Structure formats: C-alpha cells, structure tokens
Image (cartoon, rainbow, N blue to C red):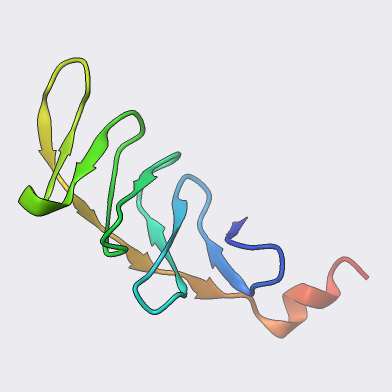
Length: 86
C-alpha cells in the first residue's frame, strides 16, 4: 500500500496514485504515476495532460485523446497497522 501523506491515514493500493479530492481528502487513481486533474475528481495516465473542459486526457506528442479516469476512495489505515513499526 502507498501512504498518501506523511501524517494522514489514507492509503492506496500499490500500482495506484494518490490524488486529492474536492473535500481535501485522498482518493486513488487506478494507475501508477497518474496525473491528478485540477477538478480533483479525475486523473489521467502518466505523460498526458488533463483537459477538464472536455473530460479527456491528451498526450502532448501524439495528441491522442483518451477518456479521463474517475478515482476510487482511499482506504483508511487501521489502528493495528500503526503499531507494526513500534
């Protein structure tokens, strides 16, 4: 699991990317090294840019457009997981 912030309890599965949500919490983008979009709802694959207005991910060199991805909620770390390192 990936920790979304130093202090936070939010975690995302390996191979996903933590992105902030509109509520200031964390969600998981279902791909590694994803780009978190400014709308704080969607994300795009690595190396692309978010076109929030048209809900697309655009690759800068190929200009290929793909749909934006919705994020999954992050998982809160359980209390017992905090004790592991102590």
